[in-house]
Length: 142
Ligand SMILES: [Zn+2]
Image (cartoon, rainbow, N blue to C red):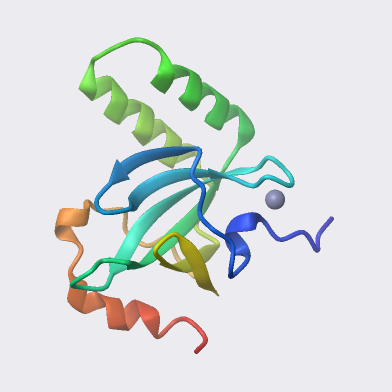
């Protein structure tokens, strides 16, 4: 099955997150599930284009099944401790595989993919400069 492409690697597919961890006029950080093979991946915002913020570039990091299960179970359990939520997320990102892919998304549709050579920095959307969008966009085929 080495020819299998996860749903998030297919231009034209729509993002249908299992869970949106952060949202600002669309997903910023989200957990995806490939409907074909049940693999989960975490996507996080790397760049976005002003002013509409509809064009977004995400890094994709596959998360091992056991880690995803534990995370989803813990995050859905009934507690209101926000620092614990952050710790659960930290554990998730720590256990995730290195980024293998960047995806360019418009609205919630995947437009293009590009290989990720390193893990892009995980940062808050507050710190993402819209001027960097052109730089990231150059990594994608036209
Ligand atoms: Zn898959």
